[in-house]
Image (cartoon, helix red, strand yellow):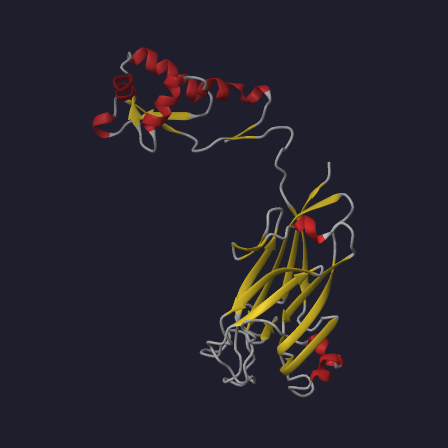
Length: 304
């Protein structure tokens, strides 16, 4: 049942403004009770009980019907609604609004990578594997798979927030694995993630997976090569930065300066001083298990 603060809602609110009638609702629960059963439970007369029940029937909270079988001469009462929502004229907690960007793996704007490295579209390897110069090949914009042993790739994402919008949560999801010649399911790698030049998290991905074929990995891709990754959700809110619900740093969305820049800069790096320097593989649409590119969700509220 949906209520507002108009006079039309008064019968319901008045019907609920009674300990006795609240107890009747609790007693009836999900079943059907006769007037006599309710009166006995309340330790009051059938006549007074009937008046309470009638008031709640008039308010649309209860219904009644003649019983069947041995109860055919009794009035059986049951609940008509199972919850009530009251809408206030002014929302204190507003519903978040959303800007979404789909970022292709090959649309990086800067890079510095070391072999093993390479790019692949859903149809072929771009240029020649293990030669970083092909990261500037014209075909790289169509890449759905990217890998390197050390270095970084950096993306610029349009910041769709307007001046009258307050950022509340930035969510970035991506499918990721480490990098190993051919593949190694137990090959950890520390991946540093930067947003607007701030290191927001260092995530240790456990391996480079080829135990089974990726659901969307093209048929021409060798079974022995990396097949799929893990889908990770990086979330930066007003309190901290986390990945899949686990806190990774104290960087908040207010630290990112989103209201001052037309772009959001995103960098994935395997740094030279990483404890687990196991490379990086990024999966986009057409490879791996999740058939998605890097997805950026910017949640915001309109300023009052």
